[in-house]
Length: 45
Image 1 (cartoon, one colour):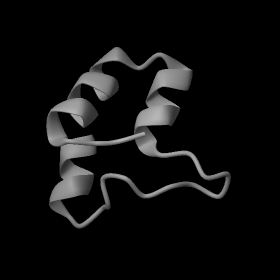
Image 2 (cartoon, rainbow, N blue to C red):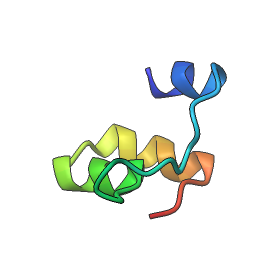
Image 3 (tube, rainbow, N blue to C red):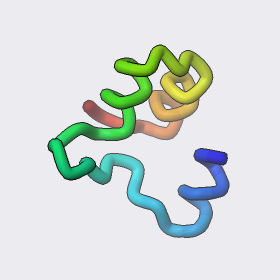
Image 4 (tube, helix red, strand yellow):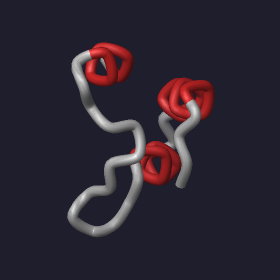
């Protein structure tokens, strides 16, 4: 799903309304696959 969103123009490091990047949210929710994917794609916190 993350790859699909990125392929369709989603921004890798777009922060939410509370200033959290996707990588931070993945860490908070302990989504190991999402963390690995985001890191591979070059996401920053």
